[in-house]
Image 1 (cartoon, each protein chain N blue to C red):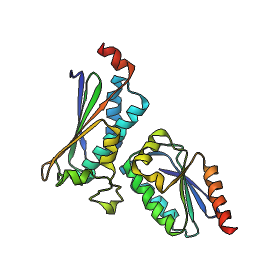
Image 2: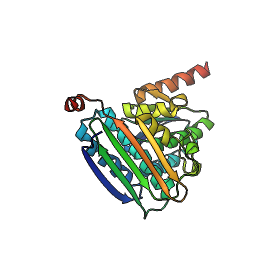
Image 3: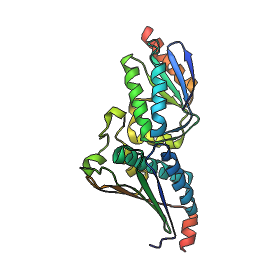
Image 4: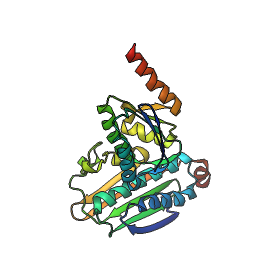
Length: 149
Length: 120
């Protein structure tokens, strides 16, 4: 796979940056000429991952969330990284409806939404060391096809 | 955010606009709960025509209000949803507890229809 472009962002772990993060990734990914549905999928998945980093990773507004987006011929690869608490049991955290913060009325559907809307979702985490969520979305449009030819 | 509300007897119709993510969920939840303190409200209809984005934070908001309304024997209906919202609702299983209608009027008619059935 041939990487065509990359961007890296860092922003404070504050909830108003959730909208900024998803819009920034969507604007960058527009280079692959995705459909409106593909853009909506990417925005939603980024929103979930960034929200997790802010609420669960840090729970502290003065830390930084990293966001790396790479564009390949036919896909977008997005990494959302925090250096916060980490996840004890990743398998459990990925279960639908599981939430460590029911008091916040969290639905526990974040990872399920990411898995449904993206083609690949990988979660790398260790307690005390933070979490990296790596997501891949294949863009199936004509423009990407033409450029590959 | 919550931009408007309208009462029709025991039905409360609320308009949500913009984006419903974790950042906005708290404010929307507080506004809704304040309105729902009025115990004469039995049914809740959401008009989502101008809600352009929602992630799983919105699911929590809907489920929480559903719990309140179902204790009163009422229904929660959502109307005017776009395809992105439809997919989130589908993934979350919310379709099983919320009723979906194309328009606010259809939702109100359906609630009234069921109420009339009960009276017969």
